[in-house]
Amino acid sequence: MSHEPRALAAAQTLLIDADDTLWENNIYFERAIARFISFLNHHQFSAEQVREVLNDVERECIVKHGYGLQSFAHALVDTFERLSPIPVTPELDRQVRGIAQTIENHPIEFLPEVCETLEYLSQRHRLILLTKGEMLEQTGKIKRSGAKRHFRATEVVAEKNASTYEEIVQKYGLNHGETWMVGNSPKSDINPALAAGLHAVFVPHGDTWILEHEELNPAPESQKLLIVGGFAELREHF
Image (cartoon, rainbow, N blue to C red):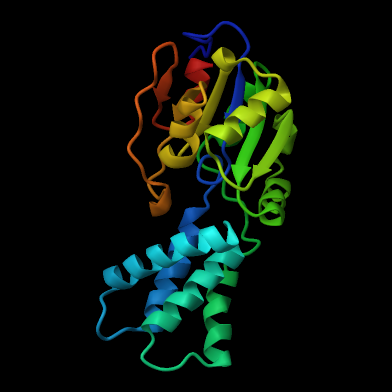
C-alpha cells in the first residue's frame, strides 16, 4: 500500500510525545497502584475509594514535587498515612516507597509499529520529541529507547501548557501552520497545542493516566485536529 501523503505535500514539524504515545508508561504505574491497594488492604474503603483518595493526593503532590517517580512515591506514602489504621513505621514507609521504585528503569516497550513509523516520518518531516516529567527519568527513557536518532531535538519540560508550546515555537523558529503536536493526552498534548495555534494529532491510548483525561477541544478555524487509531496511521497522513 502506498504511503504517499494524502493531505500534506510540504514538510511539517511534528512535536511528538513519548510516554504512552511512543512507548508504554502508565501501565507500570497502574500495576504499582494495584500492588499498593493490595498492600494497604483496607477493610473500610473499597479499592475504588482508595484510588480516589490517591488521585487527589497525586494532584497535590504534582504541585509540590512535579511529575515522576519521587512525586508518585510521596503520593503513595501520603495516601497510606491518611488511610492506614495503624501508624506508618519506618519499615512500612520503606515498603510503600519500594512499590514505587519497582517502576524504575523498566525496559522500553514500544507501542505497535512505532519504530517503523518514526523511521518513515523522520525522512519526510522534522521531528522533535516533546515529553514532560522529571529530567533524569525522561532522558533515561529516551536513551534506553534508542529513538533519539529519529529526532532533530528532544525537549523535557516540567509542564505542557499553551505557553510551553509557544516557547517551543519561538525556540525552533517554527511556523504555526506547519507544526503539529502528536500525543495521547487531551490535557497535555492536544488542547494546549490547539490553544497555542498549532495543529494536533490525537493518538488514543487505552490506559492514559486518569489525571490526563479531559474532553477534546475542537480545532479552531484554520487549524486541524486529526484523530487516528494508532501511531502507525501517521504514515497515511504525513
